[in-house]
Length: 43
Image (tube, rainbow, N blue to C red; front, side, top):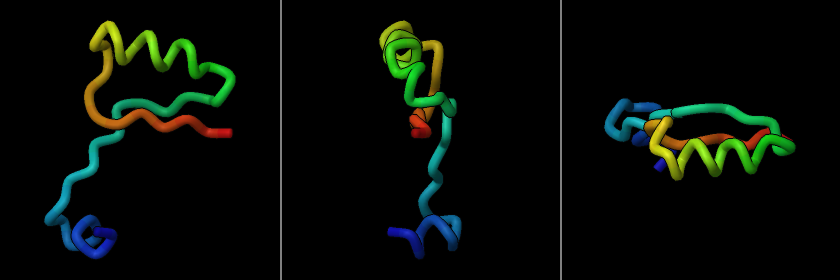
């Protein structure tokens, strides 16, 4: 899978980066469809 990402075969879209403390906000953003792609929670 990582080889596909590096080769550009698989496109991974990061829709947002949130601190772990903002997990409720990230969840609310997903529910309301304010984001596209994956959301990352950073500890």
